[in-house]
Length: 109
Length: 109
Length: 109
Length: 109
Image (cartoon, rainbow over all chains, first blue to last red; front, side, top):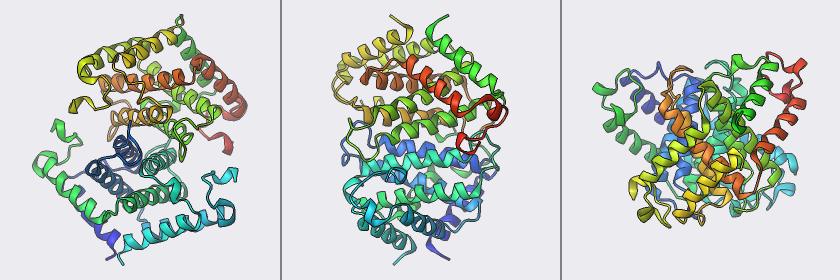
């Protein structure tokens, strides 16, 4: 079993022991992920870019990853493949010669 | 190399080819992750829970994962370990006998 | 009619001309507001705090306000009153003598 | 003074009594707004569209509005004007004859 599938299995087991599948429709999973992304942001609020407390970052990043993986589970996705496909797509949107050293969005390049 | 480290290596290579490390401080990575979480939500807006288009979900989920993994890279985290620690913590916050079948937040259980 | 009620009336008219009330349940309005908050954030991504383009900020701030006011409309809220009550509550959570000059969250003060 | 300017004055007074202007750069205000939008979403998580607790909605909506108004204050915006301009723009993006009764995004209409 791949590493991501092993983490997925752990999260699904945690969910099923609590009978939470009934709540985990994909829309609410996406809502939950967005809430956790907000809590992750809170670690950086009113602070310099490097001043977040690592313990807070780790906890909220774990929650973001957990909901991302559960959403992938819902759709039976291979998340490594999903990321690799997006990187390939981004390589076309952001060709090295145009994107190098600039943070401009692709549609303004 | 573990699966997550392999994906991380791919993302870091993509970043470095474009000389984007200069932009990727952890605060902006968390901001980017939150923006992508919003774009993922957009796949579900004004729709029933199961009506999102899978192609849109895959693209935005990939972006969320990419920024989560780059943030982990910044802090040199083992993301599998980070998730496993959070699951262990949540198992204490949400004991099976109290949490089974209810979506109540731990501080109201 | 108060200024906020006038803006609310404008937004409700825009909505009703398009027969969009059917989509505007409060959960989707909150989802829409969160998406727009993400688009507002995008104005600041990879940039210094004062480097956002004001036109982008204005457009996304307008969307955030529109969904906030439509959500208030759904619940028949007096939004001025809602903000005033929260300010009064925050004045207790953040007493001047403890909160002055520090950005600490109330539960850590 | 208009209603929105009165609320703005209240929020600025609250901020200045605590000497918080130093933290309120526009990027962090947008980050704070996004965090609060996430907390508002939490009122709807794992729930039917009409099942949020109104007290939670009011508190988080107040926070969203407060940061939106403080961001407007930073840029010295007339927020009523900002919303009216966006509504006019949206009227062009979403003409009644095309948009009536459909929740499709303008770029797919």
